[in-house]
Length: 469
Image 1 (spheres, one colour):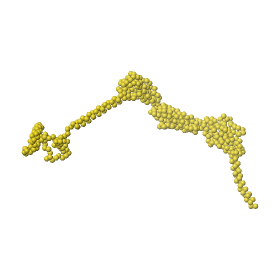
Image 2 (tube, helix red, strand yellow):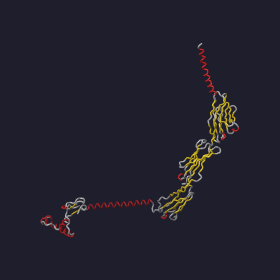
Image 3 (cartoon, helix red, strand yellow):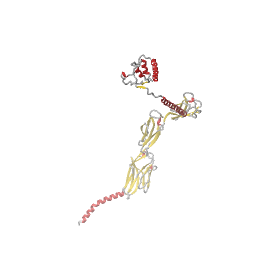
Image 4 (cartoon, rainbow, N blue to C red):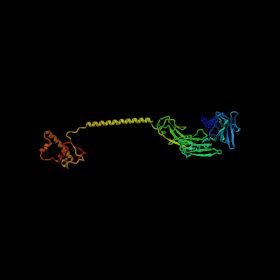
């Protein structure tokens, strides 16, 4: 009795739960789903694809898939696929609309030659049995791909001219407006202009302004256009064309033109834009020498060089911009650089040899003269008088000065007589003069005898740098 009520109670609680599980399983088996993109951007004049993926449950049957377009007046059918009856497309779309691969899983359509009238909302519908219709919508927007081109400025680019429009990049009739820019490493600037067109499109023009200089001749600018209708950036290169007067250089003269040299010439080279069309050689300091001809832009010497070929020559070049010239001073040497170098080398060697011989001779003479000089006698007296910076000795230590009133001739005569007398005394065996002077008594020498004794009896060497009076 107690078990049965309890069993009935359990069944009463399990009933609603089982019903919910049954509904979920039926919904999962019968469910269907339509998958489309949220937005599609079509390009004017090109094909557009509207994707529609169909997911049908295992217990459902696809009866029909279709596309409808929403208009202000209502919805209109543009394409129908029925697995049993086939495909239906209205007459207004029959020439440019078709299913890509119709099946129970794919309802994708393609619309050719899209125009502005195709803008709007499109709905993909799927009918299944026994569930009914399932649908999803997408918005179609028509883009207009810009027409891109580059135009040159209205005036030619001249070297050193004022700032001017180099080129203009144009993205014409785009929807939405295109993004346009210039790529360059020049120090120019860009100006952007937008123009609205009557069909709802916009034209964009970007001008590039720059001050021309010849050093940028041939440089390339790049116009870059970005737009949703373009899969990648659109790039257009534009090469600068800067016009300038001739830049002249002369080749051929190497500075080693000498008398007798043959097959010499000077060529006048010109870098110009537009190209140079006029070349002329003239001589500024006289008439053009005979035997010299102008061939195109080259001055040719048809004979060996002569002294009178030295001078100043001018090359003139002109193009449509201006006339320019270049002067060259020609010096005809008597010898070539190699011959002159050899002469200088030989002369230097000779001078070096002469100088060395002179130095050797002088050295030999000095050595021989030093060897022949007689050595000083031991009896010679060297009087080392005190230098001028030393204090003078006491008066008693000074040598007596020459007495006043003695004439030089008297000194010489007395000194000779005194020398002869000394020789006789030595020969007779008498004692030295000092002994005889002692024997003669207290009489002192006469003035002349004193002078002779001080000047002639013995040699006296006086140091002139250190003597004093």
